[in-house]
Image: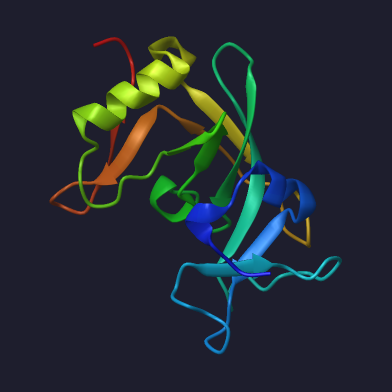
Length: 154
């Protein structure tokens, strides 16, 4: 079973808690992933590893999501994604500040008082649980420094 990483959903992680990058012979592109072999430790140095995670908002509400398992624990490496109903929220925006429209989408789905969010990846396939806190949407500024845009009140 192959998927594009952006097609993953909560059911995929319930069935297969760890997804890894496909090798060149089976990959459509660098976003092609497949479930890790069950019961086998994954090699985080040899492949991209995506692992299920639990997210908890400031009110204690829990959500399913995932992170890219990586150290150091920087949002740009972990690229946390959280599922909210049929939507998914990506807390890493790459090399650009998030748009006002995206920030408004997040505010409408979660509410500004839901932050900070905490996440903890699942300890499976020989992977330790990674934990962190999210204050908003993260990106790299023009000086290649990780920055965050708060989702607080407008």
